Image 1: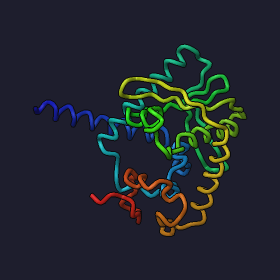
Image 2: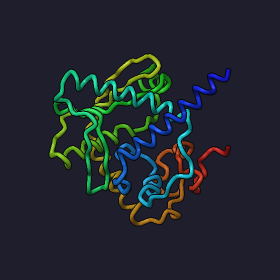
Image 3: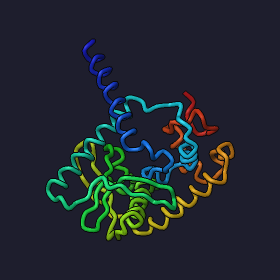
Length: 240
């Protein structure tokens, strides 16, 4: 049906415009900073960003639609909390000059740092389903991201965090689950960003050979979603 094509085309154009606007609004003038949301990711990805090498690829329309849904859920949860209690801080900007990191935490409430993660049912089952079906080696990127915000709160505002949490929202059914994060991730986050600073400063991009240098990539599957994958000598990307 031609109308469906019209809907898809119109919505995809709309999402691209929204994404470009949000990127400029949030990051223009701060291009030299690493993103807190990329904590735990491939260090070569940070090197591309530091050198301001623009990716050859762009987000596909399916990914943009998924991100848009996640952003709307984030906004709804944050706004509902703030309207109920204006003392809650949302979208609070933090800077960590030592690591050249900048980010925006989701929620800070009475000493508690909470980061929202919207996930699909498959990921939900791998995290919270029957124990035998849970991920045997779960990624710790979310935990490192939240720990990075913790460090940033202390440096930017001299605020001490009481506890850290991840608030999971299942996009398939709206289920919510709050998971406590150990303070041990703070030390791990510091080690990670120190490694990022060291390697991005002392290694040329051509020396960062995936699979030969530690944390390049951190996990092999990252390469299939990296917008720099065609500019990188990675052996891990799928051949299309």
